[in-house]
Image (tube, rainbow, N blue to C red; front, side):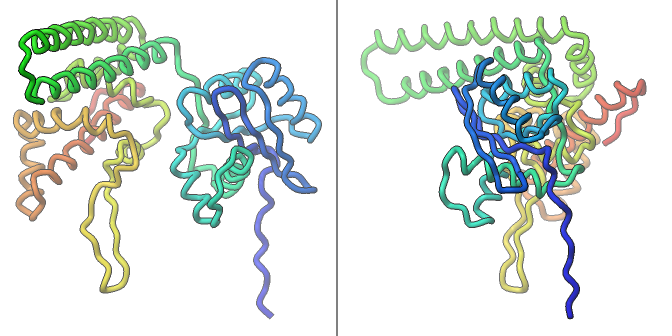
Length: 332
């Protein structure tokens, strides 16, 4: 007789939450099934949510939710003030988990249940507890989001100039619009630097990253917006966060695709690191030798640039880590 493998009981304190602009759906594991309920995303609704958990014997819950815009922040910050814990996961991870369970339907209550099952299947070392952003980080985020939007508008206006316009008046108007948008970008970037230097934490990170060849104020501001260095334990986690980790696809002898970066991360962060990587390959002897070594092994230039981008992130993490620990050594 084959012995039955005993699986551990899932944590009764974990709660799956699907959140939207005005409400959120919650699901928790209970002896008699999986109770579900939905609440409004306001003070009254969150208080009702707390009473609902209390009725089911949940005193110190661990809230699991997706990173849906900024909607999750209100609930997560409220939970942390109560002494609870919050885990914010990548929506793609939850969706792929649902597909692996052959759950093709998508509704808010079902999404909450999927997130709960995903939480129950996750080990402690596979996630970090979410921590709220400081006021300075939130302001920096707003500024950088605005800058990103303005740069997209500049690109659109430049494309309009290339569409075969005949009217000189229209061309002049578009050029004036571009100049105005550039002025707004410059203004917002100046404000971003003020916010960074006024905050002790961001200011210290800025001083560390400034030591890296290829990193200017524009790149550093975007990196500090996208990356919360406190949330990572190792440099390779940061590389994976940016989608610069290697993805291999092979099976047996017949299936073997060319390795590539995963791209399961922030595209804006990868885009921001491209030019600094090119600059580092040109002006930094160590990075230049590293890239040339990869090319000599058969890698194309694009692969070498991606490798340098990943290395810049590792160096960034090492510098920030050493700054926190009181040392200044650079670890590649």
